[in-house]
Image (cartoon, rainbow, N blue to C red):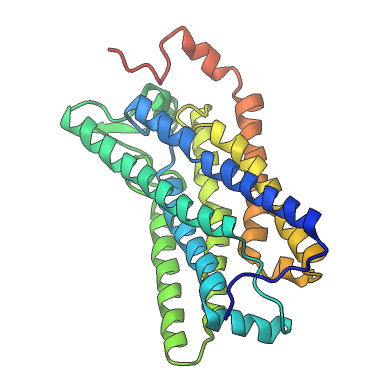
Length: 309
């Protein structure tokens, strides 16, 4: 079965617009991962970055990769999709979706690796793994020093104080999501569940993760009264990518394929665009309004990014 969606020949202009949106959103969303990667490399530490966010991110993009590549390449999934949406209709998955999902999974995995690597290096140097920007958090949560590590209030489950260990709710969520995917896979194998439904479950996992993964970072920024350690450049690119990704989905579904249901039939792309846009605006509000003077005040004191002793 042909895996590339058939598009009417009288939509050359809109095909060009869709292609442009796809390339542009891929560049914007893909680049959004690198400011954090570079910031971690320059600081040689990842303090100020929520471990819950870092652990959930690769899992979310793995789920997005499975959904995108499965819906695009699997003849079984595409046949089941046509049974539900009519002959000639295929999942609204573009080549830019394929490239972005795989790239995002790889880069977010590398970022997770940075967390482990820099924590290990800093422990090997017998240095304090917590940066100066986290002192306010420790003082507000009445943290105390235990053998070189910081121990926070046990009741604070939202933000993990240990930078390489996710919080208890995050650990529970990871186990639950893996279990749901595994059980559903067994149901597909037994013939009680269609393969397309399993792919939709993966897309739902991505949406769930996107809905919750930013919350610990928002809370951490609030507790620190700063966005130090969290690269705001990624948020600007993420916002641009969200708008372009949604535009590509709407134009491709409504104008080119004349199938508005295709918008809702790709819940991963639709939901990811709206969730990313929502949290991007929250981070921008924190950076440029709530805590806009924090970085300026610390510049004269050798801020958190100053590694010289």
